[in-house]
Image 1 (spheres, rainbow, N blue to C red):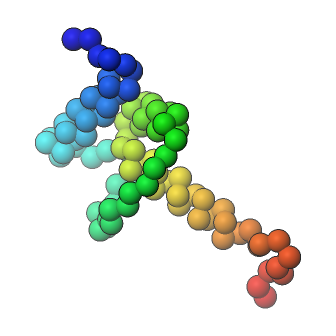
Image 2: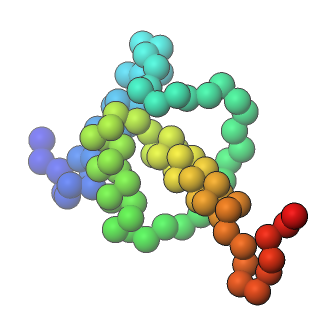
Length: 90
């Protein structure tokens, strides 16, 4: 079977991997919490999505796991940065 482009192939691989994980109840390598999640929709530059999909395939995890990790790191980083002109809380 020929695919139109690499993105189609990657999407199929990710879908197959996620389906297999759910069907066989195999845990993903990352610590996937059982906490409730809320749907969140946004737009992202296509080149970033492509790179993110490659990382997800290479690491055997979901795009959601990668996004949660990145957002969590950004929040932690921003907690330690004071806005310009403001003094740290004492």
